[in-house]
Length: 186
Image 1 (cartoon, one colour):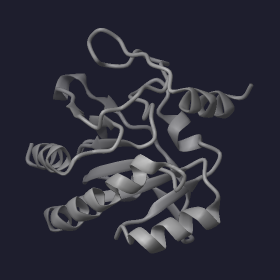
Image 2: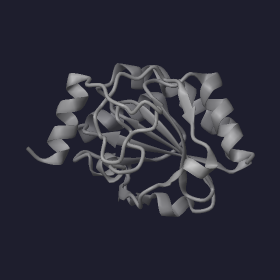
Image 3: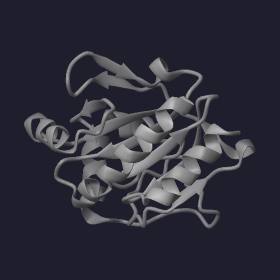
């Protein structure tokens, strides 16, 4: 079974697994049931985000490198994911309110049909671009760092390109805004 298929199978199964510290162990890509709570990592414990890029859902190529030196909120979503639909207005609102402060949002559409993903974007109008990651390569790139481990998942990348925070499951407005503001203001 390919790593991508294994990742999808674990997502569907809703498996659990984290270390006692709450930090995932290196190589732990098991999916967990997420409650949307934002976990902020101490600066000394942060791991560098991998170099990821892929085709933009609406064309072109998108990458984390395009946002070097900025705080980036990276949200893994799919049109087939109910919690993704529920959190879409939260992400849209926080993205709009933090953009002037230098925060960038980038979506990663995971294991989706392009037509369905485009329909989701037309309906939700997030206001930020998404990588079309049908094969799941972007999520796999985080293997060995802080894996997204659920759909939806949200990672906050600090200005130094390190993973500063993670939420598994649909994020709540206050949790996301507080975490983004904290990382931005460091």
